[in-house]
Length: 234
Picture 1 (cartoon, one colour):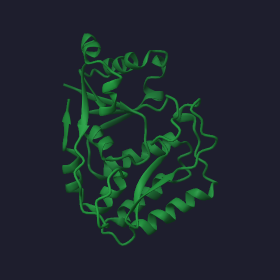
Picture 2 (cartoon, one colour; picture 1 turned 45 degrees about the horizontal axis):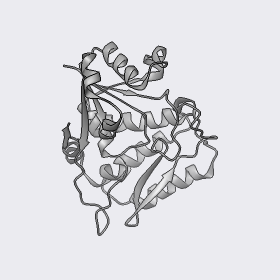
Picture 3 (tube, rainbow, N blue to C red; picture 1 turned 180 degrees about the vertical axis):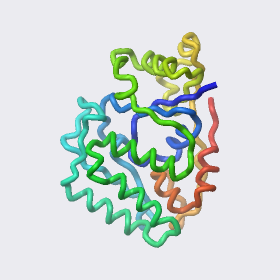
Picture 4 (tube, rainbow, N blue to C red; picture 1 turned 180 degrees about the horizontal axis):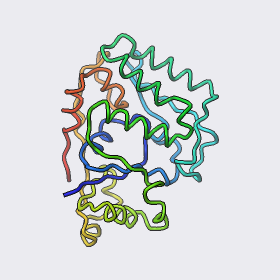
């Protein structure tokens, strides 16, 4: 049995995204679909002085008419340096700060010219940090020839070409994809329902909906991996 998942690249996404990464043999970054403004491709939340703080990676004229892979990061924007300083003030002094801050700074490097490159590296570095054995591919490089297919048909086509018999989608896909249709094509479709249990943070009350960065800062790797295994397939 081979399991795959296909998702847009998000910048240091939340726990549920990494549960999906860990649940499959091959994870494919869907970078040749349209950029989503005010989505999670270039935005996320961290914990700052006990409160949820939303930040955005500045991009050059971001548009929903452009593909994720073609959306450039504005490395000259002062907001990028501010994000680094905010992250430092938010988490400096925590046990895992130095290791996680190194990941954060590496991802923000000018070497990552597009938000796709930046977001993809953020996921891959965390996967390496947590010793995951999931393999990664990028849709624009591995499967550019099937972009004209409808949403479900393209996912099925990629799964078939990967030799996968199981496709796992984020829970939000329940409204979009039909299990019966996938089954007709020889692919079992499951939806990952994440369990997001509280953990000890540097705040009086638990703050949910944060980037994986917050989890990495506050917990040792072993406990992070335990949380990534806590989900249900529907």
